[in-house]
Length: 394
Image (cartoon, rainbow, N blue to C red; front, side, top):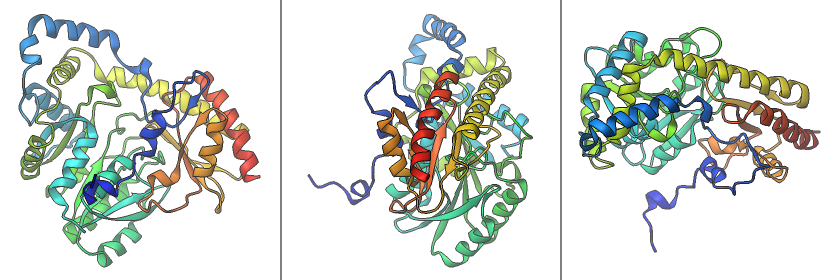
């Protein structure tokens, strides 16, 4: 068979491939980006689901409109506007099938073959593959503890051809776990204005802060409709519901709606209705606080174990929220080699090369997830990983 060039050049997501591994009860996974199952509001969702099927089954199982279930759009707009100042008077909102669809559709409506996307390096593999699928020229911008290097970004905006999108995960970045400073957020917006470029602000984790102070979103500072904000209910309710959203200028939302109509027509209506009822009838902020308390405990446990077990040659981030910690070995070591050796010892991690704009690049980094494993699994798994890691780096 002869497949299209668009799909033939794409490699499977390293993370999704790891999740296909046989279900070994002794395997400890730090590779997934999954929320903790005990964070799901199962009891409340069960009661809501029963009520929907008792009284509105026909509506829940019918086709819906592409823009999204109107009550969910309204309650999400109200929450994003009043709590986070995200929607301006010229903005609108579309419900998407997870945050991933918001990213993919933004790529679809803005990118032509050969256009450039400037992205954090490292960055979310799902977004990178979405951009690659439209023939984009991916240019990675290095990061430090404050986020994307805006000096390099400024230089690339001047030298790269046909830059259409700046892609950033400013809050609890995937894979590093870092949070971009307010000053850099402002500077990125200034540069986007100066060079007439769209910013895609990917923020699936931004409500999962368990330490420190909130930093305003880039979208909240956007006065000219230049920022597309991608959000999700996956990380605060449950990922399997596949309910996300995009906030942007009305003209952008109109184009995203057309893109959605040729993609999946509409997001699962039953789960849109369930999400609406949960937001309306329950205290979602109290629920998020419980989730954040749980993740703080797990993150602290992982960091405590790493401080005790890892070689001092290995550096790691200390996130204030989200799901991830990124580790960096000395130059010359390869995260892919470590991942392969760790798997032999029944622990899985994601090598840094999976998150690189340049897929051929050798990276001395690897990503760990602390939200999914239990405290006992964290202690045991870090012990296994430390043994392999310390033998590798010496």
